[in-house]
Image 1: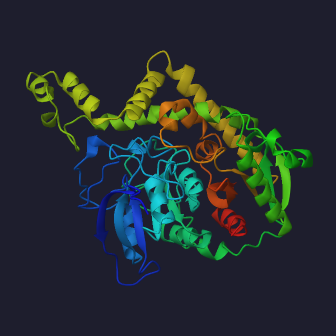
Image 2: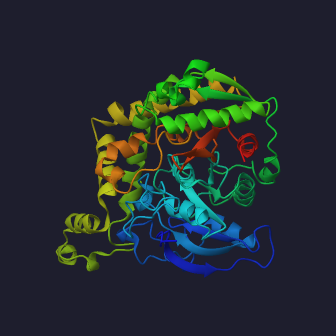
Image 3: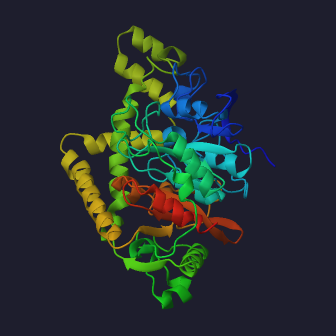
Length: 451
């Protein structure tokens, strides 16, 4: 197989001799701190930075006997849907190397899909575990916010992101989540749920009597006439959903129904505002979080940038910082910092950030109502097949809109899983199954019925 560029750093960090992950290799996304091993976030800004400590999830991997075999490639600071914004070059999709693996955890998903790692860790801010899982034909879980410690995760958008597992099967992904989940005194957002979990046991495929809600805004309706004519299926957010993706989704729903699940149509009008609200909130938090990278503390230093050291010596630190950030950040990161800073600026905070938070509350309310009518919700993970290389970079708006089905889950802080649902023209299609808060067992059970 061609070199997929799935890793930024190849290494070998041995875990304990015994444990549930003994003998397993795990690729760790390169925004998760590993003591003494370079952690770059896919950015020139952090090239050469080696953390002095392990993230909590890395400690738990080692305690469970896993061997970390590398730091996986990613979109720069997690900002992207294709793993093409990495300073270290794009990762290729092992299913079709002319296409992207999804992002921002594309290196993690590609490594698992290609057999270069048994398991992997990703992080999911708006779909960054589920999108590459869908595009690469593997399983990815975005846990409930607070179930897994974020200590040691380089922050992008704190109120949205979660670390989660990527694996070849639902049971393996759930087993890795069992290792990761549970409270951490170093992360005040974590909770007791998951401390004694056995999510892997829920992967029994028993969906008899389970009710699956299908949000019409994410799929286009559930009546039989639409099922028979998938060309009529549309996503009201991202325009026309791909016909093959929609057909594959309905085939997977039919399989779940054949196993005893019931389906019900639900309406969530708020999700039409989700992409806009997500990007305002995520970019605003990013502009704040990334302010720490100024050339004086981490990675790229003012002394490494032409003209910056002279400006600093003259006491012109703002210009020195600007030069360093211009050199260290890529175009997508700069775009998001600028937009986020604008959204938070005086006179615009209430107009943009405030309204985005109002939309977020509405989205949470719609999820609560829909999940009162169904045990889980289902949609295509991505409304389109994997992009061809370069396609998303040429049109960032297209890349943003591809997140339409995934970002609502992060805004509502709920759990979701992407599981392979089949193929369209030889390319993987993922089904997203969303559960109530701390409903990981329900989504694992439903997803395992498709394997």
